[in-house]
Length: 258
Image 1: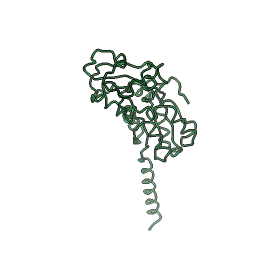
Image 2: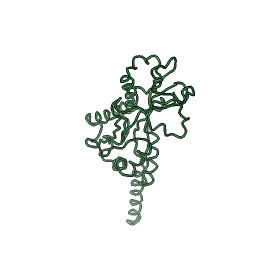
Image 3: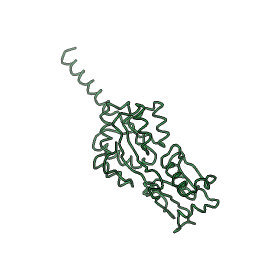
Image 4: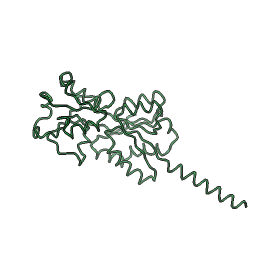
């Protein structure tokens, strides 16, 4: 085999290795409430970068448990600040990579025709035999915010027997949209989904009734040297990424919060 042919073959093999590395998708663990927004972000990022992003969605608590047990994720987009902070402290996340990418809002929502034009908040005081859907407050930050709201209204103990608890905020929406629950605490961004039935009543919960739903992102340890993962996190903070997040019903912080 000539030296020239060997050189050509080596160059070809190197190109294949390079293309394989480029084609390897970044895997992002995404809190359930952010799934729809994530699809919009991925569409823009992939078009601009040529890289692909793979998504795994669940409640933040479930994703956190998976990460600490070795799940092969590169980035976490949580629905709270607590789990990213814990991952950074424990070494599962890259120190200094954590930031707030969105602030979520909680809405009490119903499609029950009997509540058309009614007062969703007032209905909490008199549920009768009707069901109230919330996400699991132990694993889902929006569920924790719903519990805090009910406690602020002195209703938490009263509604215990009427709760329908979703494993995440997506399932919680399914409960109330399907009519299995008369009312449900869901994420405000979910109400923008055009596939959702018209609301009979809704109430955006005042932010002072619960801790801020501060959603943070963090680069995970296995992707410490992954430039594509870092580029995706940078995309969340640039003008295009921030605009998409805002268009999906979130507040974007004026200053990146470490």
